[in-house]
Amino acid sequence: MGNKNQTFTLNNNSPVDKNVQLHTQIQDAVKDGTLAAGTKLPTVRALAEQLGVAPYTVARVYRQLEDLGVLETHGRNGTIVSTFGDDSQQQAQLAARTYADRIRALGVSADEGLALAKAALHS
Amino acid sequence: MNPSAWTVAALIAAVGIVMIARTFQPVSRTAQAESFARSVGLALPDSLRPVVTERVALRRRGGAIGLVAGIATTSFLLSMDPASSQYFASPFLLIGGAFAGLAVGVAVSAARASAPLHPDSVKYARPSAVRLDDYVAPLERAGGRIVIGLAVAAVIAAIVVGAPISGVLIGLVTLGVASLLFFEIAGRRIVDRAQPAQAPEDLTWDDAVRASVLRDMVTAPIILGADTVVVAGGALVDHLFADSELARIGIVVACVAAAIALASASLTSSPQRYFLTRLWPKAAA
Image (cartoon, rainbow over all chains, first blue to last red; front, side):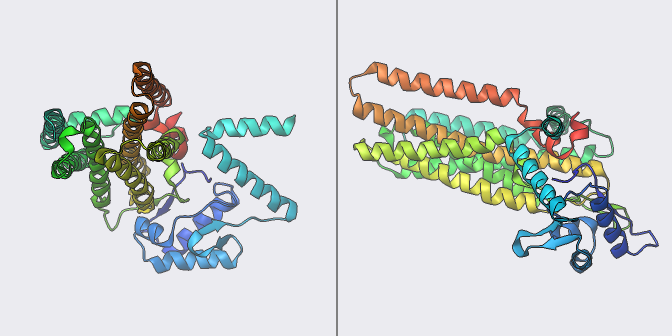
């Protein structure tokens, strides 16, 4: 699901290359859990338009992160955040993804979903 | 068309024309923007007031133009049917046509709206993709599909039992299915559009307007489906229980009860703020 309260930012006046700005932010978001495994990223075109950069810039960043194993591209199904860790961890991330999608479909809030999951895990 | 149908058409057209006129009046525009801000539960900052006021006016104008076009088109098509003066259910089709036109109108206004970006400004973007169900509550989205499903089933049932099928009924169910498909297809296109933003608040407000457009669009299949169920139900009851007033009253009571139940559920769930809980939970808290 991802933390939709967060945003990527791109500063045209920054000395840091736009490529690097975006690459770093996506990688940091995945590392700190802001972008959970299985979260779908915006399309190349949409993100490029929103950040005012050429689509090639976003496509290159996505490709670089794909080469690093951070992202996976599934053709028309878009680009998603990869799972990581050993098999158990990957399965757990996919289970969390499935649970999050189910909670979303039920219209239950994220906070309530988390509380329910915590209660279930501790029982 | 019969006189009652013309009356309904004229009333709806008049409402639409007044709505269009109000979107050009500064006092009305301001009031509409502030009313919109209250409905979605967001404070309207002065920096965004002109942009939001324009977007809200654009949406209302687009919807009103669509409403007038919808009622005009439906009236024209009905009047071309020589038997239309006998259709007691013509007002249902006219109302449905108006809502279908409104849905198209707001969708066109959303497609045309864009936020200009200063080339040197910092740009903001959402890190994850959004979906239709981030903007439209499950009750409304499922409601449209369920009601249209019931409508199609009711029409099929009427055909199977040999009840007379009027042009109005065919028009209602066709328009209902078309409006549902339009919402699903055009809705996804709207959600896939980029949201250029120079501050996180730009994104929040863009989401607010986007959610209201999508909710306007999903209203059309709900209204059309409900109309179809009522008209098809009436045709079925008349055919199967020709002499039963009780059956006729029963179907009216059932439809009214269903409408009240849906309206109550909708009001208590604050669907206009649903997008906040999904996309901006901190703002919703």
